[in-house]
Amino acid sequence: MTGEWTLIGFTLLTQMAVGVFLLLGLVHFGVSRLAGREAADRMSGPALLAVGPVLGLALLASIIHLGYPAHALNAVNNIGSSWLSREIVSFSLFAAVGGVFALLQWRRLGPPAVRRILAWTAAGLGLVLVYAMARVYLLRSVPPWNTWLTPAAFFTTTFLLGALALGLAFVLNHRFAGAATLAAHPDIRAENAMLRPAIRWLVFITLALLGVELIVIPLQLSHLTLVDAVGQLGLAETLSRLQWMLGLRLSLAFLGAILFVRLLHRLAAGDRYGRLVELSLLACALVVAAEILGRYLFYALYARSGL
Amino acid sequence: MTRQYAFFFDSAACSGCKACQVACQDKHDLVDGRRWRRVYEITGGHWTPHGPAWTHTVFAYYVSVACNHCARPICVEVCPTTAMHKRADGIVLVDQEKCIGCRYCQWACPYGAPQRDESIGKMSKCHFCFDYIDQGRPPACVAACPMRALDFGEREALERKYGRVRTVYPLPRAQLTDPCLVLAPHRDSARAENSAARIGNAEEV
Image (cartoon, rainbow over all chains, first blue to last red; front, side, top):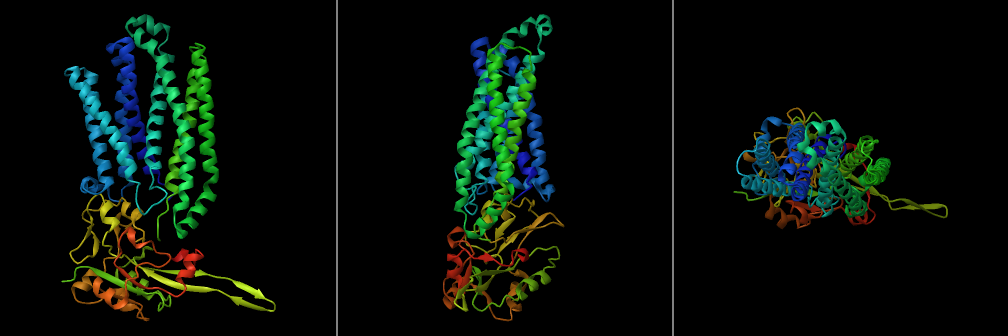
């Protein structure tokens, strides 16, 4: 199945949103221990609000995918047996609880304990959402997808895209919160000092996840042999047609990893301005492109049992 | 009251004329390339020289497939809207008042039965000509077959009459969805499976 652009958009955007939310929680936890809760709140606030529009775009893509969008609400009817219904329900719950949390956090409404419970609930729902998204593809009649490698790949992408988006936001923050800004707003010094270690940790996470993909991708390919004869013919044709894309996808991820290592060097050298933004942008663009091609290939290498 | 309708298909008798497919397209006005019933041509074998003579192992046979109104229908399981449902008599139907046209049933079905009607953006499929069934008439495909290769009826009665073979190459294994299909396989079907024979008319199905 080729050209599933709406589903590529829906799954990648949703996973990025969940990844940003979860990693933001991790960063918030770390920063509040090192620099206090106030600094952590100020540092994570804008990124938290950015999750909303990403989810909105994902929802739009999912609706464009439908042949008859006017009936879209029916998609939650079969929660008792359809993972697609469960995916939509968990998407809605994550968006609702995450949205309420973001609003309260933004306006500093309600007691912090309530906000904390909401944040933990939304994080849990995010994990459930990515799991449900993966289960949609575990169809017993579609052997290439029907493996634990599908959830493995989806969770890897979730944290990878989350780390990239969040890391890039911090890099831009780091770059543009210059000496003048710091002089004018002495109160942001604490979290500004936290940006550099946060970026470093997000790059470590990125590199580790690119390593995980190096294991998952070949295993997924080896799984293609489980399709029966008629499906094999179609897959062989698809693979020979899209071999260049697989090569490009792996090369982009590898080049991205090299650039991220270079970025770590720059950060360690204390290089404040020198092309940090350009380097990060390029590295992120390469890995994001690799993820888009990877998801394209995931749908293209669909093959079902039988006819 | 019938508890589970089923189709019978005799692969040994089928001549590949596609009258069933055309009768189906005609009755349901499938003018946009949808084929609720399709006739697959399975072909293989080769010629071997023996001195001045040649011997051959060439074979071909046909498999006519529509929806098998499975006892464990994966389309009904995965449909997010409950539009895909099973009637009391076992016929699997799409309720287009509920369908959102997401094509998830199409991904899942190992027989290629659900197909989207692009003019309305909703799924459609073989419904066993339930309108004819309700009038006591046979489905259009069964009535059209000049070779008497197709039959229909209560699943258990068909199994008593024709046996319990439920899959033939290149259909999927029956355990996937428990299809309500009774088959008389062609004599070359085992050879086709062993040699992973190709579908000769892929552009037609």
